[in-house]
Length: 102
Image (cartoon, rainbow, N blue to C red; front, side, top):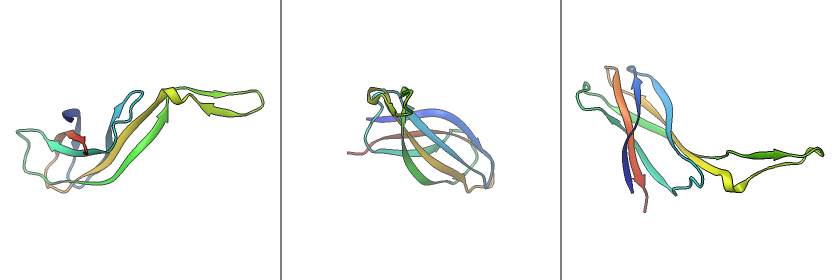
């Protein structure tokens, strides 16, 4: 399923930032294609993407007095991150859009 207009970010010329999307538990949406989308009315720009990652997280963890620890596997979530770089000569506002890879 496709999605768009997630977040609102600003990048100055030549700058980069790690951004991403997150779904709460169960959170696993499978592989996701994610791209920055310059907002309508912005100056001409070139947004480059690198370093895609899928980050595993848990909202509940536990630790016992014997120092064993673990996670509640029902509280799993994932974030899908990437680095966006503004290769243009103007600052730009953008959001994220994408969808599941089939």
